[in-house]
Length: 407
Image 1 (cartoon, rainbow, N blue to C red):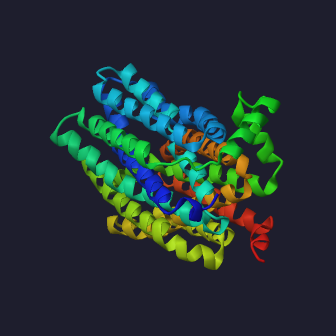
Image 2: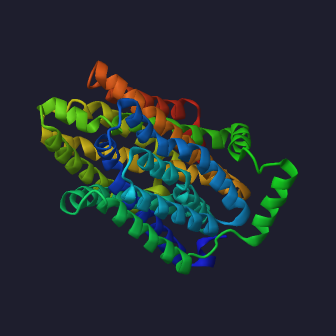
């Protein structure tokens, strides 16, 4: 199925679905540690609270993706939105640490939106337009993370601790209503039936992620972007927990000042990411192709990560954020497009789910590595991240991915 058959409106609905979801997600994520500390969490409990979302997403994302291959994208997206709405309202109502942890676990379990949305885009776009479609999800990420954190922080300060959860839950509920009435099924009935029959023959109803991983490992052209997604996510997540710590350490700031200044840099980075992934990538993919853009993204982002640690003044962090956002804007949609183009039509959801599951694993491992490295040397997490991404770019060049991109 391609875009001409379904019209342009499905992409608009998918963009809105992911955007609203990411606004809610962006509102909650910066507050999780603060809320955990408010309810008396120990260091170990904070680690559990910080990782439980990604841990649950790691196990459940591939399962939701495989399920979407069998029963369709629409019901999985609706179920995901319903579960996410419940988790946000539980976060708002929680008065104890176990309930806060439960709310984040539920959010991770039902975090099927991204992988299923990517599979949906693969269903309704032509291969040559795939990266453009994936760029819409990147734009939704950029805008969502630009708006989410300030809305969450301001609403907490002005209204109270329940406000972010209530606002995020309301946005998610509106999202559910919108998708219920506007989102049509993208996966043809014959493909669903074929996948159901294959599952019965192969017994794929259990441990879908492992069966999918085995198939991906036998397909080198598909394995490369899937594994690269894991390492690129691991590298960037090394930095997510130490951005504010670096700024605080560099300029000897109070916690509130460090959080505010970090937020401004992240907002600027989010705006840049939205511009690149939502607009520029559409012009660059037809001209250069996904492989060349991905390699350029690895090299640009790697250099930016190393430079970011040595910004001489606060204003320079905004300058360093430009190549950092450019690298991310090139890497994320092009890798997603390559995965979807190299996966067969009957396993788009499963493979996208595997990709997101591995990304979740990377987001579990990355922050722990980053925080440990920061305790040894503040610049060390940035060096590690830069080395990983630069090695990715060099491996793509030396192993023939660049050669393969030429006609």
